[in-house]
Length: 106
Image (tube, rainbow, N blue to C red; front, top):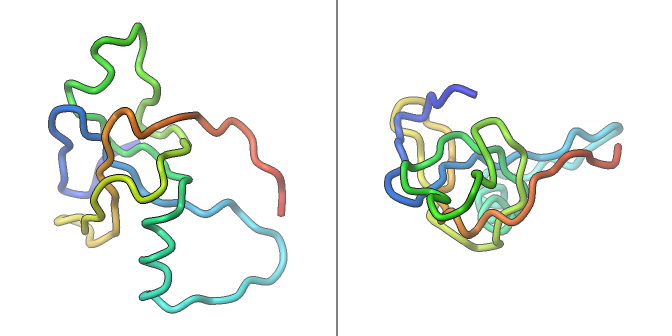
């Protein structure tokens, strides 16, 4: 995955982007103000970039760019990409708990 955000995580920071699982059927459209609040609480994310100090004491990294992961709710800092205007979240490397390998079809 290529980082087009214009943001480069430093130290132990991980840059992630919120994602919603693909849904089959109709959906309710939420206003942007509500979507931003939901994105801060949502735990599903795509890893965009990893800081150079992340997981140095572990044998292998917990995640690499492109991985779907679960992160701590309310962790990190919401940031707008300076190059693309998208919403991102910067979290600590310890805030990533699991990779998502398969999801239920909705």
